[in-house]
Amino acid sequence: MEKDHYFMGLAIEEAQKAAQKGEVPIGAVIVQGDRIIARAHNLRETTRNAVTHAELLAIQQACEALDNWRLGDTKLYVTLEPCPMCAGAILQSRIPHIVYGARDSKAGCVDSLYRLLNDERFNHQCEVTENVMADECGGLLTQFFRDLRARNKNKRKTQA
Image (cartoon, rainbow, N blue to C red; front, side, top):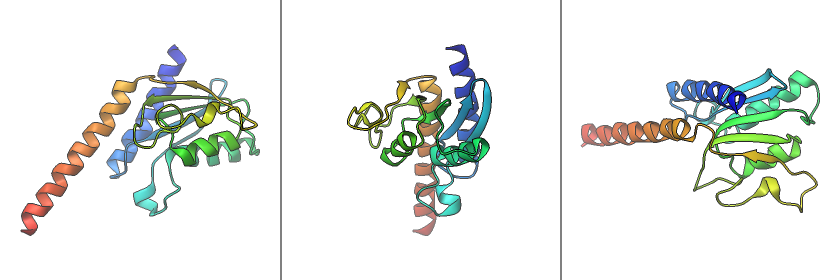
């Protein structure tokens, strides 16, 4: 559990980098044993590309680092419960274990809306550890969207 907090702390650092860029603050880290092989944060606004989620970017880096699309001996840490696209990529890359922080009641497909990673109809399932540093992860998102709403409100006032 101590290792989970350490690596989630690194994922939170990635999420903070995203927030500094005006991106939704989601960060991801992939480890193999105790070695970090990938770290990433959301870049959808920066790249104007819908698939540049933190998890997908980290999975790409990990595949490059290991020179393999199969990430069978790795663990993914992500600050927010993965969406359907990211959950699919987790299954396809054969990551055996993910650890996430906050639940996503609007798009989460690990526990909230669907349970894709544990669906036995797929040929791969994934162990899941949830709610690791959930308050910190959720707090980043709450503050980000609070600040965004305030900025948008101020913009509307100045344009009126």
